[in-house]
Length: 415
Ligand code: CAO
Image (cartoon, rainbow, N blue to C red):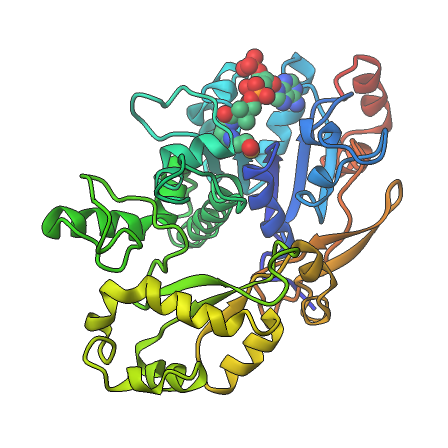
């Protein structure tokens, strides 16, 4: 079966997490992704957080599936020549170097346009144009600068970063959408274009609801669905909301049986308005159904923490999975706090290809997260990440290099 992006060739000049997330997605959709790395070390993540000495780390393998790897020193004249050939041959160049690195290498947008006017040049940078545009940026810097850290955590604690890599993988996702959109526009214009995702922008986009709340706060001075209401105070910026729901239906994380020893024996409970009657019946508080202090969502707002505490007395009598079953019977929205161990072992996630077991020649079998975007006509088969330079000769031969030329490049330490 053909793949959605069959025939699209990507010059993958990415490293670490943000860029590789993007090119891995494109590879999963069928693009031919050629990852260009420096000989010797390659992408720094190959050697970071290693769990097996001398073997590509899980950090690397889980972000570089379905790609080919070539080694190339793009600062040497002969390496630049090879890069030029690649630029002429590929549809998209994706990079997430520090600002200015591609220009310093001699490959400005203008130069790339000269070589291949159809080429799409897609970049992740920490910041867009402005005071910080020259800064190097990692995940948590973006979470802090994009509004996530200020709005995550509890009111009485410091700002907090989240485990979800919204700065890196979030930016990669945004960039991938920009690339396929530019490819689509190219079918009409015949031209390439620049695609830029700043990590700050990507995080802020994912924190959109907090900018909503900032403006609500400025207008009304109070956030009635936040845990600070009615007894706490509000300043002039959106406070951290603990585990309050980000949407219009109040929610909170509640303890379940075993919480004293199991750090994940909790459930997220949503006091959805249409389910209020059934919630009251299930927890044995039928009197709340018609009581004026509880009957309407508005009346409940100043009492949310008391309501959650009462529901928690009920959820504490059962495991999170039993609580889930009980509530699901009545369509009460809720979700168990699943540990990574539980997720890794969940059979239904294996069945859908969301968790995939991959075999690697050096590390053996490991688990990865498969493609979260499922296309019915372009199913994803997750293939192991390439070893450093595994496809150098194959790709160069495809570009028209003879065996003799390849040997010369090797003897000059260009590849
Ligand atoms: N051959 C020769 N040189 C190469 C090369 C190759 N194949 N590949 C890379 N290089 C060179 C670059 O040209 C650059 O050289 P100069 O500094 O002389 O211009 C150098 O390697 C280092 O690149 P870098 O500055 O991007 O790498 P770093 O490790 O210092 O910084 C990072 C890493 C991530 C902070 C930076 O790349 C960055 O800010 N990227 C943009 C934001 C981003 O994506 N961050 C997320 C990373 S995921 O957590």
